[in-house]
Length: 216
Image (cartoon, rainbow, N blue to C red; front, top):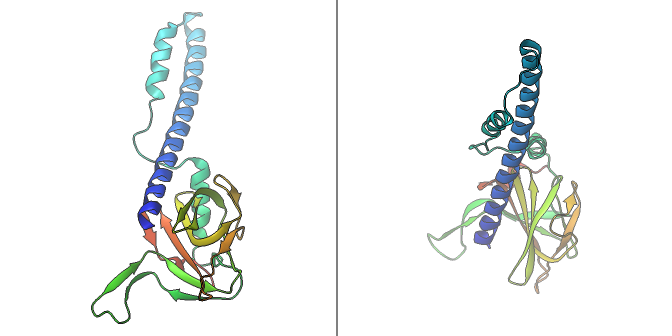
């Protein structure tokens, strides 16, 4: 499952890069056009209306509108990322009703197996049967996929991504805009009556400890 999450996040990063490059190209083209118009106006005043050829102006515009080489967020993503960062430590818990965190972020020992440790990429939150997963912040549903017959949702908040796993049903679709506390789906209850949401938080490909971001 984590490999699939990683792959989907890489796809989202590439989409964000392309959006940023397209915005940079539009901005560069607009600035080049404005400068060309201003230069043409100034030249007409000083040369009595003699102008340069259109091909020369076009070449200059093309050079100035060249795509950026460095990755950067577009304005909308940048604003959303900044808002998300300012809410560190006060984001709502991604489950409705009473809950308890039954598995924390990072490495942990396996009961009964000496010297065996596993690595939890997020946290596991146990709730009551019927509990629902909810968005921790405003964003857009970037992916929904199934693993072992259960649903998993990725929500993008600028260059941050929250991940909600182990859902028996979903209430949103890919591309849906969500707000803080929007219900995403119902958490699966297993045959033993356990209702556990697996929740991850990423900044691009970097894995974050969700407990440092959630409020109480």
